[in-house]
Image (cartoon, rainbow, N blue to C red; front, side, top):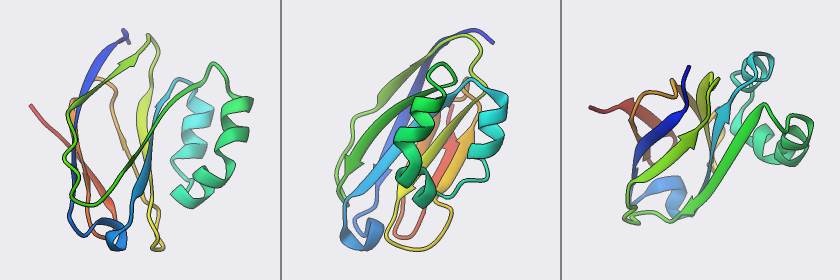
Length: 125
């Protein structure tokens, strides 16, 4: 797959994460074995082990991080990815129990919605 730029829209609900800020990591994953592991990893584990995972896979992953507060308007962002990207994986650090993880193809423009209890990712045209 070729590299490129991926437009991302973000919406943060006014009651997101029990009215607390939400940390979000967007990963561009290039390594299939790492991808398989990440797709089984809950967000709480990702945030706890992030530094080690990134250190162990310097060429297999690219990470971008943000933190948004409930109701915050967010300008669209553009994510750059290089050739060989397998998936985009998103983790959101919610206070509640759950996986709080989503994945989408790197060539698919999408909208990330941070709702009250979980994140949602949907393709957009």
